[in-house]
Image (tube, rainbow, N blue to C red; front, side):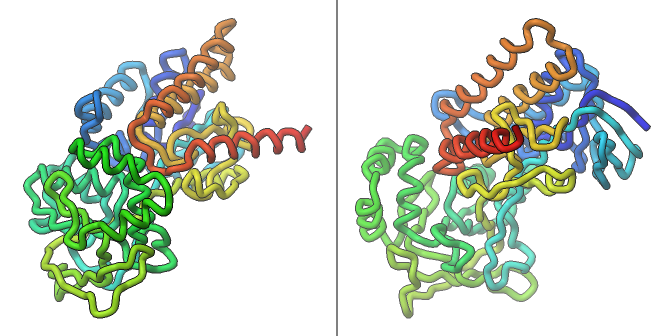
Length: 405
């Protein structure tokens, strides 16, 4: 059985960042990931940030992997975790059993599905798959692409596909169902987009977006929104239309669209069809936390963080001694926040290993402050109430510790 100081499960931005930090402080670290290449969601990321230029995730991932390897981190790619047992023994499919006193779960997030009639046809894919195909493998998802679902990820990937040469015929809303909820409401989407106004490609859109600050203005905005849509990066943004069916024989051939009222109801006799050969579905993200449940971590449901998440402290410790979490398993945020959380987790665990000496308290304090600074400076927020969710989690942790005392 191989022994190490820290086992990190997940080689995305949080896991790699934690491994680099802990290893740089003297810990022996093993990183396990089921994918053939480390980097996680970084591999598909390519977007322009206000005042910071282009974020090229593939290059950032490559730099982090090289840094980790140079520090002596063991990275096990294409390795599945088959079981996690007490004293943090991790059973893998390729390397047998690995044991460490500390376990960091950095398993990231998964995409929510948008069930639409016809969604199993070849040519229908999740927006994350389209992102990876476009930015990492340099393959266009299709020649004529329709994006279903309006959020930060879908807007970003739509632009990336257009830059890669695909014709993105439009971005429409999800079909009105119990699962889509506010994602099929034009007024709600107007409100959502108003919080992203600073990212808009033109001064007019940024100014207009900044004005839609309350529900009445959002409904007015949805009512006045052109039925033919408004172009963003020369891509039609169709907030008054929803995809209701995907059609084709042996693959995607066309999509049936319906016009919507401002509150997301289908307008009778408003159907139309649009010819496409690919459909990208974007239903948002949720924390991928099954392994945390497997090891016995306590959970809570916080929609502000994206769903069910392991209860954890501001230092990323869970209710199971020796088990820590970092990245999107703690709540859906961007890669920069995940990396900052990874640094914090690596610092805290190195302290627990006795590697920091008298500097322990100050180093942890700095790492914790860095997470807050990165979060505050983030230009992109996937969830509108992420700060509220973090405060709720801190209170849950505090109450839990009061009960245990």
